[in-house]
Length: 237
Image (cartoon, rainbow, N blue to C red):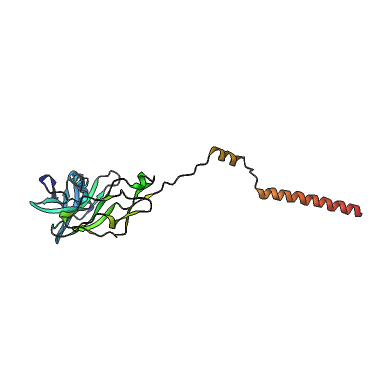
C-alpha cells in the first residue's frame, strides 16, 4: 500500500451537483467532477485536480492506492473506486472516491505479475499465454499488495498455473475461483503456405470437370449407336 505523505494528500473542493451543466462547468474550470461516499456517511459532490488524480492512477499501486483526501479542513482516508475517460481526447471525466476505514477489510482486484522463464518456452519452443491478469482478494487496506507475483519457471506443455498455485498469505483472502487458470504454455501453430510448384501444378490442371468429360463421352457413344441403328434399318429395307 502507498504510504500517505504530504505530497500524497488529494485536495478536494465542494461543488454543486444535480445537472450535467454543473459537471461541465467544473471541467471547463480545469477540474474533475467527483463523488465521495462510504464509511457510513452521505455522498458529497467534489471537484479534484486531474493531474494529481492521474499521478495516483499511474502509480505503482494504481487505483488501489490509499491516500489522504482533504476537504474543508478535514482529512479522511480514501481510494479511487471508479473513473471515466473522455473517449476521444482521453481526458478524465469523472471520479468515484470511497472513504476508507483502516480497520475494515476491502475487496480489491490486484494485478498478477509473472516471473521467470517457462521451461515450455525455453526448451520446448512453446509460447506463454497469460489467461488471467488480475485476481480479486479481500484484506485490510494496509495489506493491499501492489501486485501478486507468480513463478512460471516450471511451466511446460500440459501444465496450467491456477489461482490456487499463487502465493497465499494469512493477510489475504482470495475470492477468485481457485481453479481459475492463470497461465499456460501453448504450441506455435504453423501456417501452411503453398509452394510455387504446387500453385503451378494447380494452374495446369484441366479446367473442365470430369463429369463433363464423361457426359461428352457418353454423347459420342450414343451418336455412334444411333448411326449403327440407322445402318441396320437401311439393310432391312
